[in-house]
Image (cartoon, rainbow, N blue to C red; front, side, top):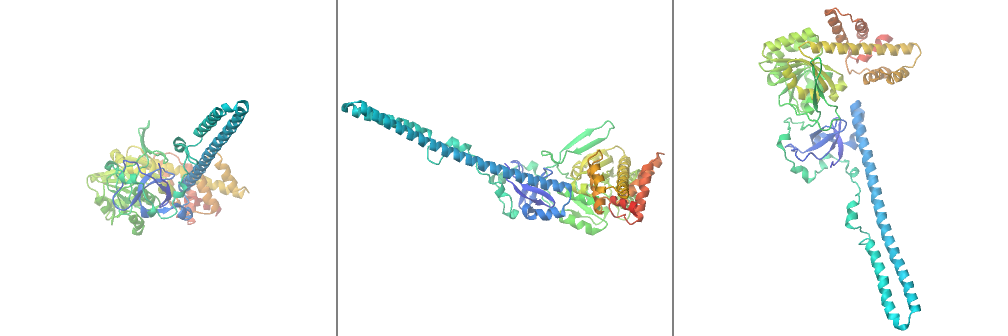
Length: 536
């Protein structure tokens, strides 16, 4: 049975619950076993990392605008409503039970009084119709007659006044104390039931040695799907899956590049119990992750040499090459058996060149660009497109589960880069079309909000459409996907088409609009700022 105490772990809504009886509690500082609303994941969390729900609810809602966070808060509120309903039902049932017992007792009293009255009348008739000699016998007989019905009536009434029989007591629904136990103070004041301290199962203990994160994650479940094309999709089942589990790899993980995408990826790797060493060109960006339990690498070469698998996520082909081939770069740390996974969105030629130099040093290489944005990265809901070393792809499965909802293996090196450029070409062109439609609505006297409402009710309805239109309507172009990067991807996709003599006129037109937006100093804004290319 769950003992519910609600709170926050960073931006995740959670509640303290009883762990499975066979799950061992980690050693060290006091931890609680929690369930995360919205994802249904479970983990051991240190006391000091939890915040009471009611005390911090408004603060957390202000700083977390993501849809997943709002869904989690909605789940908490729904739980509270259901709990309140159960308590009211329980109280109502208890009241009905009490009334029933009182009514039964009252009927017993009335029955006894009626029997007495009948006995008295019977006795009077006997006295009238018999002689003095029969008076004693009649009296004795009437006493027996009056006593017997009364005794029967008493047997039907409750055994003790105000207290039900044993079988009735077992059926009484006690008043629930669940809502009373929802946390209103600090988590440190909570106490586990005695059974929790007795749980034992070393085999299930996924203890993490990092100082700031004490995790034993039970999360997304894998399913492997073979497609006709020969590609394989490792899919994390929907994040609401209750019975799935992620066992973090025991390999040491490195991560290079803490931009919009890399930051969310590293955060999720840490949350799921991976041992992570980080490096970023701007070292200050590493501080937050060090606090969360990551280790600091001084150079890319040092990270690669000390880790088993090193991931990298940087901005463009030049940055990807410099990271590998530059001073103190990745290549200097590569030794036989070392693994390198490039998650940058680059062209197939660049990724092929990087694969060749890594493998030439005895290393293993996988390309794994990601489809998504900053919010999806933070939520661990990216789509990963991988190609290259199949064994390395499988070795990365727990990492891919932590950072994404789905991953696809697409075969030989270069395939993932091509697929990623095509995906972003479609996305970038669609974004430019949205901006064009909104500006056309405006200049023809139509309501832009009404246009969005109509689109949201039709076949084009999507989270992407709604979010980008909202950005434009609100004039909020805070980057979720940099405009300069989608323009870069369009440029590379057009080059990909040229390399195989395939026309890409739609992408070419969209690319020109993004280039104009860049000329208007929109490079570091969100891709939706392409709208400004139409109004200047």
